[in-house]
Structures are given as C-alpha cells and as structure tokens.
Image 1: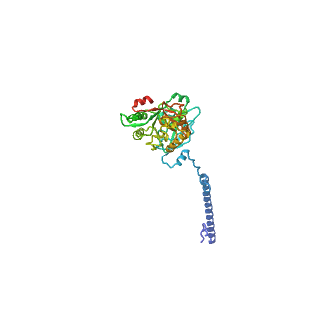
Image 2: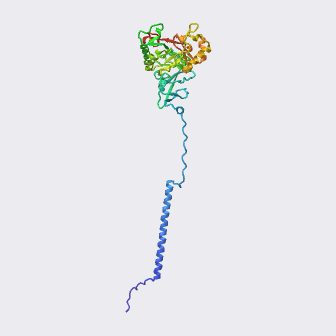
Length: 387
C-alpha cells in the first residue's frame, strides 16, 4: 500500500560530493591568501609610516668629526716651555699704555731688569701688585728689584701706573745714598785714624730696622737713573744703602743684619783685593774699581792720575769679575773730568762721590752725592738725615 508525504531526500552522488569538497578547499585557500596579503600590506604600510615618522634613512657610513684646530700657546706658555728651570716664572705686565712683553724671572731670586716704560707726556710711577694699588700709587705694594719673585702656578702679573710730570716734580723727592765703611761690635768704637769709618753694629741694626719697618722705598740703580732723567717717579720716603770696600767686618757683622731685615744694599768691592760672592740675597756687588783704590802721584786717588785708556782697562777688569757695570764708587771719592770720561767710555752710567747731598731730578749721574755715616751716629742722627 502506498504511503503519502514528503519524499525522502536523495543523497548526492560521490562525484558531486568530491566537487563540493574541492570547491570549498579552493575557496578557503583564496580567503587565506586575501587575508595574508592584507596583513602584509598593513605591516608594510605601518613600517613605512614609522620610518617616515622617525626620519630614518637607509644606513650609511658616517664621516669622522673634523679635528679641532689647536689653540696657539700664549707668550707666557712659550716662555715657560723654553725653560727647564722648575723655579722659572713668567712675569707679565699690564696697564694703560703698557706694551712690554712678558719676561722670565726666577722664583725666590730678586726681580732683575724690570722694564721702565716710556710714554709721551707722562712719568712712569712703577709696578704694583694689583690694579687698585697702581691707581693709588700704594708704595708698600710697589714691586721692584729689592724683593724676591713670588709666583702662582709659575705666573705673576705686575700692573703699571703713570703720573704727570707736574705730579712728579711736586713730590720734590731727594734720595739719600747712605755710605757705610767698616763695622765694630765695640760700643766704644775703634782707635786710630780710621775710627770714624767704623759704625757700631748696634747702630747699624737700628738703622736697618728703621728703614725696613717705616715704609721706605728701596730704589734699584736703574730706577735711580730713570728718576734723574725725569722718567720715573720715586717717593720722598726712599733710601739707598751702600758699603764701601767690602771689608771683612761687612761680611761678618753687617751682612747678617741686612739679611735679617731683607733690605737691599750695595757693596762697592775693590776687585783686585776681594772677589767674594754676595753674602746673601739682598747684597748687590758693584765696582769700587779694580786696582785704582790707591794714591796717585798727586796724592789723590789713582783714577785722577791715569789716562782714559788706562781707566777703561782697569774698569774692564773689574767688570770681568762682577759681571755688571751700572755704577761705580770713586776711590776716596776723588774724580775729575778724565775719570768721568774713562768711566763713560768703559760703559758705566753712574758714579758715586763722597760729596754730601741728595740725588734729585737732573743730578749729574757721574757725580752722585752721598750721606756719610760715621761712628757714633745713632738712630736719631739717621732720622734727622733721611726722615
């Protein structure tokens, strides 16, 4: 008997099923390919955007940085490099109108050969430790060859000052050159005809202490020469200390006092008789001639009896011992025009006599006066003479 309703579904044949499976696989592959391409495209685009954002460029070898040009050495550095002395010091000069080049000095030694600049219409007023000292003409801070070189890191700068000729003349400085001879430790002095020459060492100690502690300026000989020419200012409170003959008592008694108080002095040495080295830092050796400290035929010093060539020969010998000219002390203080010409031709600029007086602007450089110190002249006597 027949049954009525939905007829049963027919099962696809095997061929149809295979075709459907193949189509599905192909579709899946296509879909995966599309998805993969999209992802790759997105990644590439993102990478490109990052590259653009960071400004990155294709890597390349970078060129090395240029070598900087070395800074040329300063004049001070060049000076120091030229010396192997660990005590070398480059001294520089500063101030309005100052154009002097730096120079080498030696730490611990006295300043030597400091320049004395010139400027039209002005007088040089010295070197000072600071610009403020220079502006104030502060004499305690004035630097010259009477004191040792002190440096920081092998360098020091000195500051120059100027004043008008009218200011210099208004100072009216009168510079005493003190003249000592022999010394004694006996308060009663020595006997004999040279008694007056022997200063008591106690008086000498008081003299040098007074000079060292009351603000005296101690000019060098080149400064005195420039002062005489009107090119350099020296204060009224200045003094130069000298000794004649370089007697043994100078070495034994006086030189230690000089060293104790650190006061610049000059010992005039007769080089035919003595050629001792300086006893300390503060003693300058200068000439008392080589062998003219003798009486001549006329009873005066031999220098007044000799010809110019003979004087030149004697002074050349003295220079060979001392290594410096600058100033000489006439033997016995005797001189004449021939003596002055002999010194001039031998290269000496100044000479000290025994004539009493003070050095002022315009003094004859080959006839410098002096202040003689005799036995019995204590501190009060010195103060009356030099202030």
